Length: 324
Length: 281
Image (tube, rainbow over all chains, first blue to last red; front, side, top):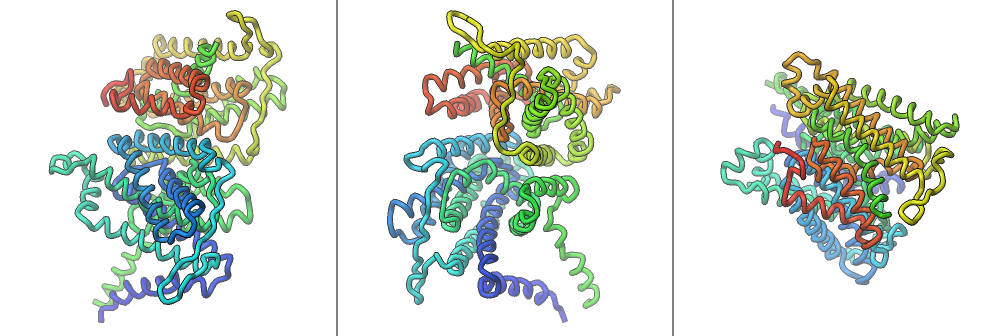
């Protein structure tokens, strides 16, 4: 009997059930943590579309995340009761728009130029968020009231309840990650990977390198905008921290540590990043320092990231041999 | 008066950017940790002046410590990533940028720290019908000497010739029998020392704070992009340009001051992607 379908898919079903049922089995503090992990998962997955699949390393990726967060916060504050779906859509659109503006300048350049130019643009957006006090409130930030969420059949659910918030965030995060996954299956997604491998040949085959890169950058920006909006909802507060360099650096760190070679790498990275932070900040205030050390070790000695430690292939091969 | 002000900051920027652009020209990696060397230089200067009450001593000690640190990073970490391409190298330097930034926060805390200038250099002197702080003139004077020394070393000495050769073709230098890896390590350390020196000099002028590394990194990056990667002369011109732009920018359009240099960089990138003095890759 071939047990692979069960081994392969069984754990997926199990993991899925666990993620959905999580709020019912763990204490409230942990639900809080898990919600944040989910948001970072989406953020890191969208980042890895660029780093892992397009071969682009943006050091200023928080620009889109931050713009999404600010867009959501401003809508919650000024437009009264807007349906959550509309807010998320607008945040996604603003993330997309930001990415198109930044990408138009940056994607033409490769490697180091691209990495630092995006950082320069992000610092520009940061400066705007800091100085444009009449809109963004500068360093003081904008408080966000979590709205009610209309769910067919159940009526209006309050997102002040962390369990409801978790499920809503889970819904959007899964939607985002799924669309990233499907994006890579499209011809456009294939073209992106093709360009990472050999840009000249892709251009020779007739692909428009500039537009393709701009497209994947914009799409990643859209997802980052969604993640930003969810973050605003989660934190109930938006300040310049959502758009500063540390946010950009965090996503670089978690994605690389998780592993860029596989789709699940950044998810593992985000989970590890948050758990590491949660665990070690009890011991020391300087968790970033220790995570930086983990990062350097991974870059130097573990090219595939942490996810490569969970490589099931040798086990599968062993099983295959036994079951014949 | 504003012109001198811009020149002072420009020369300071040049001191940091020169090491960065030399290393980039040779090894093809933009060393993000370079900005941390600058910051570390300033912080060590703070500690040395607190302990020994001698600013001059810190001018000697701080670059030495940072140079050793730079060489260790190059020898034991960066070199391992060398075969794996520039992204891996960039990430290693990024890791150290991050680690050193946090280390500084851990040792010295997050608040800005003042470093007093030496007594002789305090106060103002009359200049061009106004008065001007002596210390800023000292920065100008000192960085002028560094610039002179740097160009003499690069033009006249054997090491300098090797370095310039390695900037244009490192592999060929290696093939011709010079020890390129050792040269890399030396230049990396030398660049780190230069950055630290700039940090020490900047400390009484700008005070010492944890995000000074990031600030200078972005300014330096703009300088190098405008000047052209790997070009020392280009770096000098554009550093002064950026210094002037910032000092006049704050005077004329204070709300846009932060944006001006990025705007300039965007324009340069569109009309001349290799920078003012850069050669085609």
